[in-house]
Length: 84
Image (cartoon, rainbow, N blue to C red; front, top):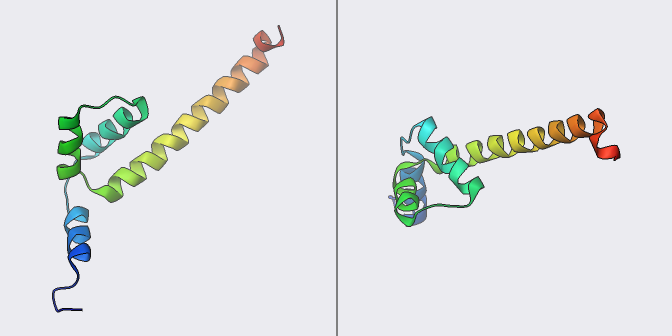
């Protein structure tokens, strides 16, 4: 290995040093959950957002989504609407 390190580790360090805002990251994750995204928006996200932040935001958004679904199911089952 050279003194500079491998090209892959250099690219990972550069990606992790990106300074995308929390709001930008959450917006990108929300669009990905919705499943609709322009290619220009995706390219902007790739250039600006820190991949570690995107992973953390994605896990948090998934946890919130599952929690909301569980609460909704409990509400519907508890109200007797599902008993028919």
